[in-house]
Image (cartoon, rainbow, N blue to C red; front, side):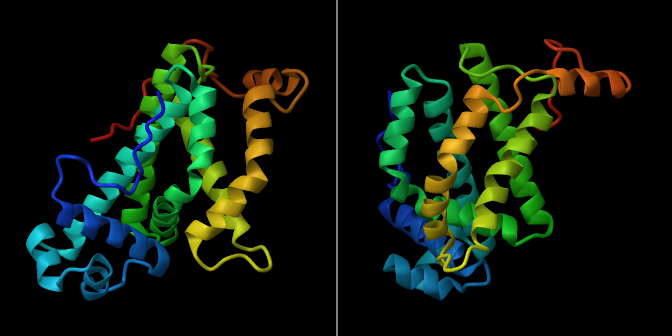
Length: 231
């Protein structure tokens, strides 16, 4: 069943003030970067800066809360599309609501572009989450298993976010990363789905040559344990 809750809507058990501040922070951080002040976020949320500090304690704690919400939302959306029954319908449902995900994608791209230890940890966490829903998809029979699941997850992460970042180099590309994402998805959805569903090479001779070339190649069906674990 498709999760029809808006990704920016508050969870039922959350206080509306907390959810409103978090949504405003995700939007503002994604658009302007993480140097933006608490007062600007408070203005966007319609609360005082003191209220932001009272609810979250610090700007860093607010960012941690934003990270956690983004991780959870991405993980749920991916599981809807890749694992749950009726995945093609869920995928089309996500496409129909893609504009709702604009702030989240803007936040993810900004987190990666920001660089530094936080960016590395952010990517590691996304890879760890990907390993979980990919494993669920393999178990459900919707995803082909890999000889090295972690390497594949990192490659897919790099392909997806690399494509979105390269799209920013196009003449006339939108300044807002979330807005760029909408156009990038339209341009990359078909080739990405073709590659993932139908493949690219007509035979496996290059793969076989590689497996013979590398020492101690991984054996199909004997996937190593992933080294990352999500919180």
